[in-house]
Amino acid sequence: MRTLVLSRRDVEAVSTMPMAVDAVEEAFAAYARGEAEMPPKVYLDLPDHEGDFRAMPSRIGGAGGEVAGVKWVNSHPKNPERFGLPSVMGLYVLSDPKNAFPLAVMDATLLTALRTGAAAGVASKHLCGSAPKTVGFVGSGVQARFLHAAHVAVFGHTFAGVFADRDTALAEKLAHELGGRAGTVEEAAGCDVVCTSTPVRHPIVQRAWVRNDAHVNAMGADGPGKQELDPQILFDAQVVIDESHQAEHSGEINVPIHDGTYALDRVAGTLGQIITGQRKVDRSALTLFDSTGLAIQDAALAARIFAAASAQKVGLEVDLVGLG
Ligand SMILES: NC(=O)c1ccc[n+]([C@@H]2O[C@H](COP(=O)([O-])OP(=O)(O)OC[C@H]3O[C@@H](n4cnc5c(N)ncnc54)[C@H](O)[C@@H]3O)[C@@H](O)[C@H]2O)c1
Picture 1 (cartoon, helix red, strand yellow):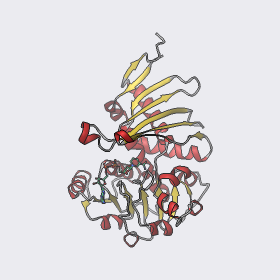
Picture 2: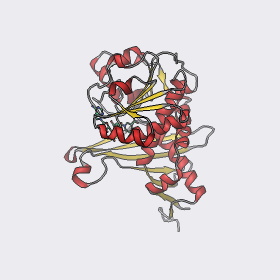
Picture 3: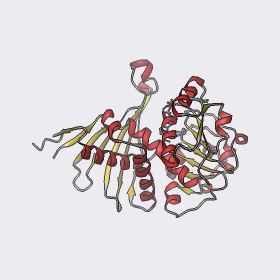
């Protein structure tokens, strides 16, 4: 038995956004049905290096088959200037739950970007009143590209994109490459669907800019103290989270919860509960998906990538555990 080693290029060769959307939707549903396990993320802080590691294990069972694995990912914001390395690099180890054999070891940087974009696409699919005519992107960095791709995967090329960034050249570049136009944060926030993906710690999207029938995907806040939105948006919206512990600790709701102005019991449900019909929202009114990024999203997509790479004979097979 051999372990499949997949580089970033290999992952790129076999993965697609529709594959990611499908995998992530199934993962959220499985978790809501109680068919998945996901212990809390483990953080290993490295203050001497101004960074951290995170370990994200999970198992998904159910009708789609059983998968398990762990993502080992970091955040070293000073890496580009200090070492010429990306600030985030991820590795995924996919194991067979029945005997623990390591099926694959793969780059998880692209996997993370794909599964994050896909979560927003799935949220828009289940929380928008109708197919959006305009989708705004507040933040035009790495994630914005994948958020756009996920909305194309779900809705087709039927919407106009409005890209905003404090670095206007980035917004213009994305608008040029993906189609659409660059605009202000206010213009992007006024779209039918609004995707925010900035690392800010103070709100940059005002309540007055967001329409009462919009859907917002709040993707940027994934750590304590991070906050992109005027809290009034949370008070007025039907808020759907990915998972309660992570959302409370690091989601868009973390700061208002910490301040005592918002409480977890105001949340309308998890995305999995919406997908499975356990909870309902009024899709014609303001909805918001607060994403922190779940280990089950990674496991589900890693399993699809492994299956596709095995079928297409992509990657390097290695006798990693020495079975001969
Ligand atoms: N929810 C999840 O699952 C998940 C997964 C991955 C990343 N994230 C988070 O998403 C955020 C974006 O990640 P990324 O990889 O795209 O980062 P990135 O650095 O590539 O992009 C962020 C963009 O935000 C822009 N920006 C910063 N401050 C701004 C402001 N005040 N107004 C307008 N634009 C501003 C930057 O110029 C940059 O282009 C980060 O906070 C990251 O931690 C969340």
